[in-house]
Length: 117
Figure 1 (cartoon, rainbow, N blue to C red):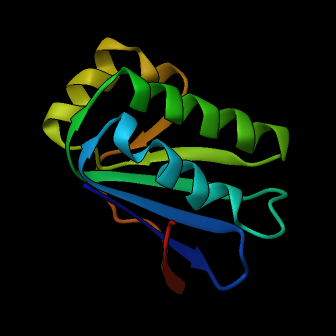
Figure 2: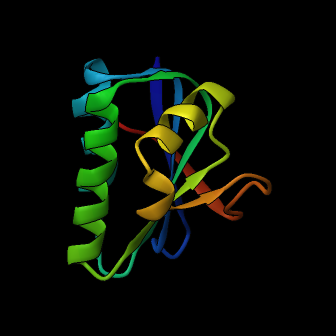
């Protein structure tokens, strides 16, 4: 499991990529990827779940916390290319009503690489 982050050059887009299991074991690392971003007003967060193999209820909660974090700061959250297994969980939880889910195009260019930690 790993959590990584990329921030756009202007700091207004953050790509968070989850690989492997998205569960309570990565909760602190996941929170750190968005809480440590300077100038958090109006930031668009993109959560790439294409490499996630599993998601539990704590991961759903983490996405909701990110959504609240972004909303309080005039930002937004998008879920990018969830794996088939993760997409099934998102659909059962009706997350398509809470998030925009992008199934096709990779998002974000001109990013600065980093890791959450």
